Image (cartoon, rainbow, N blue to C red; front, side):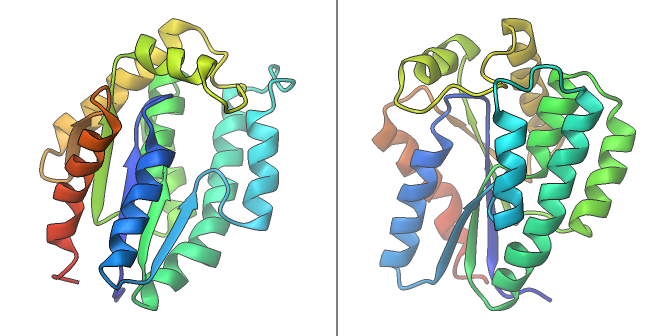
Length: 210
């Protein structure tokens, strides 16, 4: 039985997940809690190598099936090396993307069959699910504008067509609508401070119960 709290931040491109993850970590640490901040794909030495392959714009010939298997491989390493040990030791774990990004991007965006995706993710994670899921939602056009005008490097997924990104957002919203008690949907088009306040409102009540 795990003792820590597992928080996953999800959302389409440009939603500000990384910014909000940093703000959440600061708030939790200020409350005296030990925090692991990590990301997917990545979070481990092996996972970061896989991340570079997945996001390299030069790999435009990658098949959707190859893509989803690479994500699952990185995730399995991440769960075994970082997530489960951190939670078992009582730490608060903040993850920038997790399983639901696969359902949204490869299931929704790439239109792969959701049933085998669920089986694959269950295998990769051993059934580890977040305690708190936050969906930072905003219109696709707004998010992509942020990505292409920001300081971060544009990656292979950013370059997908608008229809792909719209399917991703719709898939995220459908996941949240299907499990309203398991998700908190936050308007990520609001000012960053307002988004941070909403994130803290969603997370902090769950912390004392752990």
